Figure 1: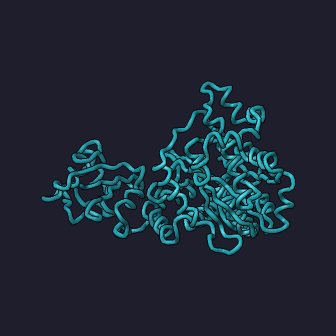
Figure 2: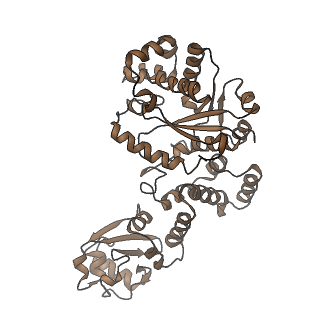
Length: 427
């Protein structure tokens, strides 16, 4: 497998330093990508770089995943209009542990010579004094060189300016590359296209400090066809941690991809070969309403991030909300998973004491909750057969619900018509 060709046909390649492809074709190369530890989980925006590392390792090369324990304390100005809040060491350590656990799902850390390795730049910066840094690193890169970078020019010419801390970021990242080149024989740094300036600062430091050769490769930044930011929803980031983004919501994020974006994403975020993707696209073009690409994309990514069992739950959750799966399915889920399915659905809280003697349907839906605006409206729709609780149509407005009606002893699911759901939480 040719790594650069793989990125090319998938539409992932952006910039590549001359000589890089020839080097990669000669034999095993060690290369690295840095990951930002500002949270204890990566999100889908990180997946493009994770996929780059997967392809790199599958092509026979050795990937290093650098988690920025030191650089996380500084903050990368690339693409930012304001300075990042600095993190404490305790928070950083928590974040690093979470990220390492996630990366281990994707990369093979036990494959012999090209086993993946995790490194933390705090390990080589924690004892590096300021005086030693400006003597051993700072003298090799001129201010003119640093000022020429877009990430610096944009901030200095903007309204907020730029602190010295952020100004030095490219030197810190450049030294990461130098350290890995010197100590790990790592000759290639990869990253998103916004990282090109920082990466080549590293290659320049290696050249000026030790007359060494190093290389750079960047991938396309992921964009949505409608111009909105990839990886964001109204609820915020789509995380890889199931505690932050439920597997159901994760699955739905990919399933709801537009047709245009699905053709792009299936190349970037799956390991399907070109023949398989072309076949899926043919099926999609012949019957767009079946959403073949979206289903294949969502299945592949959900299984690789969360596993087969969580994918099956996500399918059943979709069938429950949009199909004919019975209420019994919810009893297979824990409380957080139930709430995750109904994220974004109106929910109401009712005291458990209300169910001790039983509560009738009208009072429940229009008194203790606001499923209906009035009891008259509730009675009318119940009489018309258009209201259900726990997937069972309510027979009369006086039907009574007690504690034994609750799912997991905690929930009721109300429906107005087929598609209007409401979650009633009893506590």
